[in-house]
Image (cartoon, rainbow, N blue to C red; front, side, top):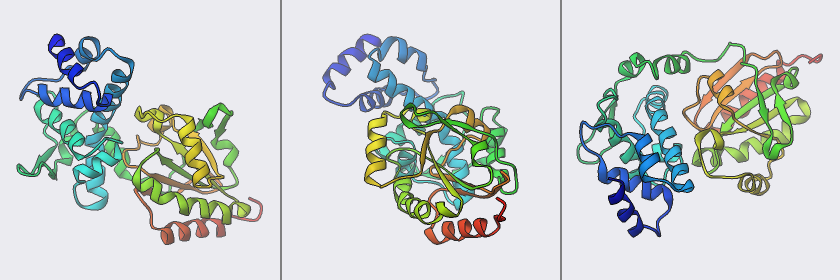
Length: 297
């Protein structure tokens, strides 16, 4: 298998590593046979960039069931393959289709979805099966139980480019808007201008916007230079930090981006949004939280 792969990959030398990995997986899927990632890592994809791409896809593979289940619960419909691709920074809908096909082929993975045989689009989600799966059940249950009215978990997040860290204790007394995003996420790009406007208008009144970037957690290939350029282009002045695995676990493992938590001065979550939030809804919630902030705070 490894020898065949080397020949195959030499012929695709001009393609990017992620495309090579996906094409190899697509060509070697066998119904009823598990895809052994360690074999791919040790025998097939030996170059650093290929292994990095494989790690990113492996990370997405284990988040897709949670994402699809939560998306279906929140929006009343299944996400398209294009939406799945956007959420995991995949090249296109075909890449998302390959990962879903891996799930369908692997006998170790319960049948979470039903799909249209012609288009490949997901037509149904078996949320109960996901909830009963020990790998996903507790996480999904936490996500769907809701955060509003609950204390925000404590967090300490490293600032971009190694400039110290930001912790939740420093935000007490302020209204904090914790915004979890990743570089290149289309709904995140759509959300950014309103967050910039809110920060500019309301930071003097006690609003602290915190942009927690999940690139590293998701295994994406963006570096601080790309993130800094994006911040400059968007005129972002609010705090930018790295989202960590510890905070992701504490906040129920975010699976839809962006996700936003509005936290009052005492540290209680007063609003929780999944996906893009309309500007008027976001602004109204921030204004209300600031009105409820006492002068002493």
